[in-house]
Length: 198
Length: 232
Image (cartoon, rainbow over all chains, first blue to last red; front, side, top):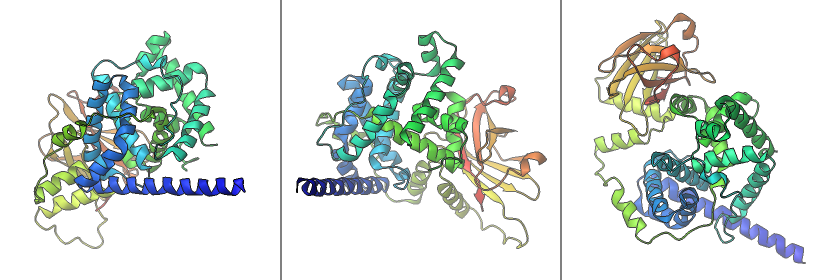
């Protein structure tokens, strides 16, 4: 009996996730058509999550809020280019927020290697987050596959993604030729992809 | 998925691009290639999806006044005048080929009606070159019969640099087509060996370069405008 109730609960959760995703997709598409109330809906349901992303990159509220503001203005301006067939709304939003935050981090000269030693683990998504069910699965998979890389390679990838580290900075820190670091990261990326796509 | 379509080199390149490891001209060329190479674009997007969970963090409460700050920094709502619509269309172009074709169609509307095409003539290829975050925009039209490519700047301000035109074949890397005129139309005669590559889906891109062109045939400037060729 408990199996049956578990599975119906899973179905129920999966349906909620799908509905949340459909709502977000609609809000994002309507934002792309210049609908401000849809943009506000989008903001209300995703800003806490994207603020978490910005805080992760900046580690400090004031800079992270400036980055978040910048991210939503970019989302408003670029929403018309969102294609639901190509990306989930949350992936698209996280990618825009991360890219804007990294641009700002680099422009401020604060980017680079700090995250090498911090944030060694992929964060758990909050249990009550709307996308929890699906995201946890993706996060667990990425966490596992990054964990399977050599520790140094995993740190390089985190430093680039969360700290905006460039090849030149990684090479300097590693005291290795740039070409060596580059081919090492390229190999690690291919290994990561193979692991994730299994 | 796109497995098997791209080489491992290209898959790694897409990953480097999504991670933000590419700089300057390399980043610009990868971005231009996304516009013309759907398999490469899909791989970059797949990398973004693979890596996005790395940025996931616990949700955090945001200051209540941030929404007001965002609203005040949005572009002011405009009436739905034709220039406003055109501006939004340019802004939203995002180098998508369908959008590029639409923009070109819109530009044609503002000109005298084109002559009725001779039925047997090959269709010209066209492209609208622009960028989402810069002012530079051009139109291109290519006549396969003569190998001539007409480049017409709509807006261009490269400061003290000069526009160099690049051809990015589907699944290939950038080939210089030489310098073009920043202020007026240029006719570029595509070298015979490259004409076979000129078809729907190839990307044209502009980078700012020193006088005389990119040293060693390798772009040094960022891509300031790019667009995909489509049948007119």
